Image (cartoon, rainbow, N blue to C red; front, top):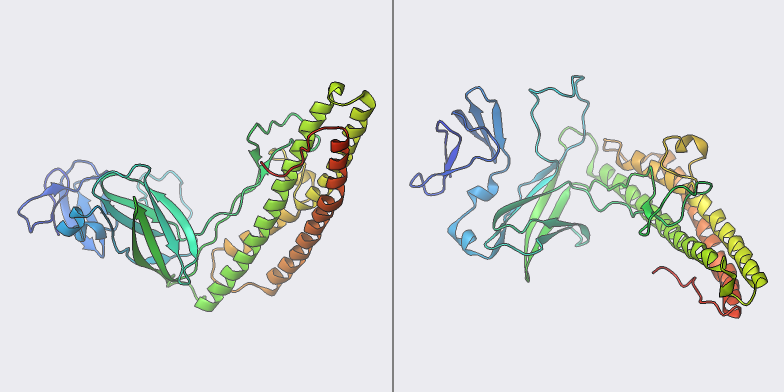
Length: 384
C-alpha cells in the first residue's frame, strides 16, 4: 500500500500507484508535508493544522481482491496491550493542543460485501473457550471497526420495583428503576490468547487475538491471574445478591399491588377479611424488607445525602471490595486483608440467602393459603 500527501489531504493506492483514492476521515483539507508509517499507524504532518494519526491500517493493508469478493471477512487483529493507568501531569482540562488517543483495547476489523440488517455479533472467548464478552457491530457495507475494551460483562443490574422506605414520592415507573448511586463494574481480562468470532448472517468467522501484558508493570502473569480470579469470585457474589434483591423487589411489588386491590373491600367477602389480608401482606413485606435491608440500603433515593444517612450494606461493600481489587490500576495479587474481607462478606451473603429461603418456604406459602381461602388469585407466583 502506498501513501501520498497532496495539497488537500492524504491519499492511498492499493495498485502500486496506478489508482489513488482519498484516505481522508476527519483531518482538515490541507497540505500534507510529511508521512510516517509507524507500525500499523499512519502519521501525517499538515501545513499548520497539527499532526494526525490513522490508527491501525491493518485492514487496508490486507484489503485484497479476494477479501472484497467475499460476503464477509474478519481481519486478524493486531496484538493489544493491557495497559495500566499512570499518573498524568497536572494541566488544564481544556487544553486545545492536547491530542486524543484511540479507544482503549483491541481493534477488531471486518469487511461486509453488503449491508447486514441488524448488524453483526462479535464474541470474545478466552483460551478455555469460555465466552468473555459479546459485542454488537455495525452492519454497513465495506470496512467496519469495533473496539473491545479488554473487559468482560458488567455486574448484573438491580432494578427497584417499589419506592424507597419512607420516600413514597420517588417514582419507580412501570418498568422499575436502576438502583441509584451504584456503578456496574466489568473486569479487565488477563494477558493471553483469545479468539474473536464474527457472525454475519448465517456464517461464522474467527481469528486469534493476543492480549499483551503492560511492559511497564512489575506484576507477574500469576499475580494478575490471582487478582482476576478474586475479582470474578466477588462479581459472582454480587450477581447472587442482585438476584436476591430483584426477587424480593418483585414480591414486594406484588404485595403493593395487592394492597391497592384490598383497599376496595368488594374484592373480598367483607371488610374484615380485606383488613386481615392487608395486615398479613404488610407483615410479610416487613419480613422481606428485613432480609433486603441486609443486602442494600432500602432507603436509597438517589440524593447525594444517601451515603450519610444509613450504613452501606452487603451489595455496597462487595462493590467497594471489587473496585479495590479490580480497579486499583496496578497488577498485584490480592492482599490477605482483601481475602479475609471477602470471606466475611461471603458468610453474610449465605446468612441473607438462608433468611430469604426461610421466608419463601414458610411465610409466603402461609400467605398464599390465606389468599386462596379468600378466593383471591395467588399473586405471589414469582417474577413475570
